[in-house]
Amino acid sequence: MSTPRPTARHRSLGRWVDVVPAACALVIAVGLLLAAPALARASAEPLGFPLMGSSPWWAVLATLLAQAAALSATRRLPRVAVVVVAALPVALALLAPGTAFGTSSIAVIVAAYLAGVRVRRVHLGLVAGTLFVLTAMATALNVTASEGVGAPSAALAGVVQAAFVVGVPLLLALLVASRRQARAAHERELAAVRREQDARVASAIAAERTAVARDLHDIAAHHMSGIAMLASALERQVDRAPQTAKESARDIRAQSTAVLGDLRRLVGLLRDDDSAPLADRSLNSLPQLVGERRTAGADVVLTIGPRDADVGAGVGTLAQLVAYRMVQESLANAAVHAPGAPCEVRVDAMAPTHVRITVVNGPPAHIIGHDERSGGFGLIGMRERAELVGARLDHGPTREGGWSVTLDLPREGSILGEGNAAT
Image 1 (cartoon, rainbow, N blue to C red):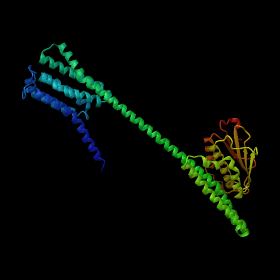
Image 2 (cartoon, rainbow, N blue to C red):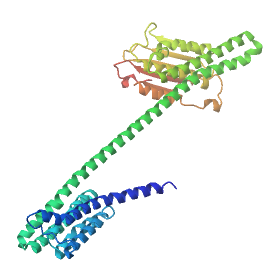
Image 3 (cartoon, rainbow, N blue to C red):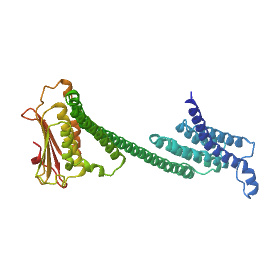
Image 4 (tube, helix red, strand yellow):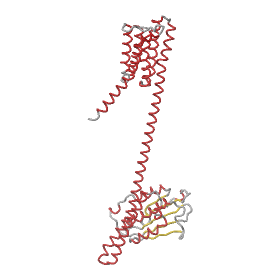
């Protein structure tokens, strides 16, 4: 019900836009026609205007009214309307030639301008040529009939009059139309830039959401797998070893506190651009991570070579976070897919161009059901994180029936080549 109201308002505004130039041209032309007697009395020479109320006078007034009516239709029928405006003076020159003929040129000037603004470029050449010929013809006929000049002089007067009455306003209209088109093109370009910027922002938001989802998955998988192992042991220890059960309960509490701390750190990373919270998720913090897994009951060993090397030297903070998450996720996967299997984390920092981290677990201690083998997004997240920091990731089964994950982290200023591919 609300749609027709704007349409009716726009139509009413369009009608007023059509009427205003027609009314202005009519008022100026009729004003000159009515002021002619006063101007003639004030001038020493006769102006040649017809007497008010005479047949030529009424012919001129009828022509001016008809031109105004045609001008009011230029928005709906631009080509037809402007041609009619220019054709009416031809009839006036035949019926009532004289000085008053010049008042009809005002409407032709307005029509030429409106043609340049409203007529499509594909039709503008034909319309402009028609206006020029009609105006030149009307002027030549009027000069010949009223002043008795020869055909060459009348034709020259017609061309000069047409160049002024049609050419000047048409050029002005083309200038205005070109500026409008340039402004519209600029606005479309700005709109396209805004859409592109919005698309980039949406893509960045989606990427951040995916990264947060992966971090949440890693944190939950790491700690929850340990809590599940402790809870399973606790169930068997409650009756047979109450003291050990209490220790397992404390370990479960510690794991729960740790997962809350990790979640808080993740939220802190989202709230603050400072990279300081990443310091406790680096290569140097791998011993602490392995110790937590041992406390949870996993059979995990850590080997670092050389023994006293600074394994994080030359490796960026974000790359170290990627390595930490890889080890964390690999140990969590081993706990789920190979429960009871021994695991080894090896950090090889001997190469000058990269640091290699390998996590290997043996075959599962018992047959795993189908539901326990269902995978998630861990390996996908590892690979995508490795690509973001220019690292190389490789994973696959071992000859013994276990699983191996290898990550090569480039040191700053180094690019991994084919020779450094993980094996």
